[in-house]
Length: 218
Image (cartoon, rainbow, N blue to C red; front, side, top):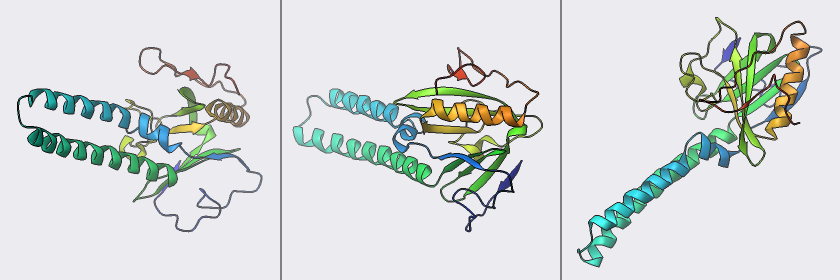
């Protein structure tokens, strides 16, 4: 595997170099920014948290003048909207600067807002994959990398499977038509690894999701 930190010039969108002869692009896509904001940046949970805090603040301030209450609650609401808005904006930028590419030989992840990196994941170095539905046709496809290869979690985030800190798993986050994308990845992986079986990663307790080694709906 290789990591590139600069790709001002791209031979093709998402690809810092032209593909070798015989290798072709099977799919390209990016995260849905709304789903990324909800599931990676947790803006919905944060908004609920702020709403509860403001409601508690209003309850505690009962008995004070309306002007004082409105000023205090208004300040809190503005700070809450700023925080949620900033995270939503970051999710938008993370989505629009990201491009996932599946070829017949590898998965390429171009990620990063300020510091852009391109992760090149050969299919022969992928041991397993898992699909997690996010609803509305979106989902995550997490990839288990063969040892001793490893990518730091902080380098991947938010394009990483949640809570897999010791052995980070690159993840195609919140992609549309996730079932069909998973089927394409499984098909390409089987072609690149004809004598092996993809490992099952599904964990009903930690990360409920269908393993790509199981039948999935395309």
